[in-house]
Image (cartoon, rainbow, N blue to C red; front, side, top):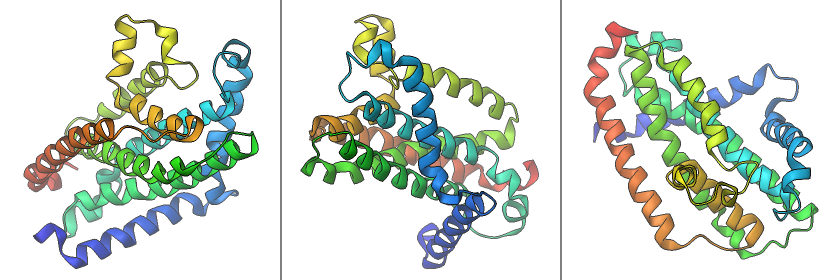
Length: 256
């Protein structure tokens, strides 16, 4: 298939590395921000909420990290992808290659940060006395599932922004709501069994965070059924997203 040609794969790899380097090149701490950013967020949340939740939630610092890291990855990667077709206008308009590579490269660069942050979670869990076991071998599954979710959302956002510039502002508001609607600093049981709990149960990011906490804190591998269901749903949405991008790609040049 045209879109899987070797030169396009090589281009994707080069763009991923370039984007990863560019994002960290002008920063004093560089790639360490992959660790420092979630750590600082967790420090603030812990200072505010530990009196309320630390007694009820086991290993609360690790619990917070396992929530902040997936959320930060999803929010950062999708936000960076929104305007990528516009910011790389010369490539979007003048170059001949599948333009979704621009979005893929942006997401994959953030995925490298995500992997580093997850490794930091493991270190913090070990230092704070959490018993780690073979369940850690399932963390790459979380990375793959997180990437799949982030990809289709990013592709649709990037495509939508070309046609409607308000998407960026609306999405930033959505991310603030998502932070509260995702059990990052509180336990889902706090919501009871009403409508709010059903919203959380349908939140794919909450599901990913639940997988991460199960592996890190409980030492349990998520059920094969839950993982397969999550993968299947998001794989279908990814196919839909990329197909929509493919069909609308010819009109991108005149819109950006």
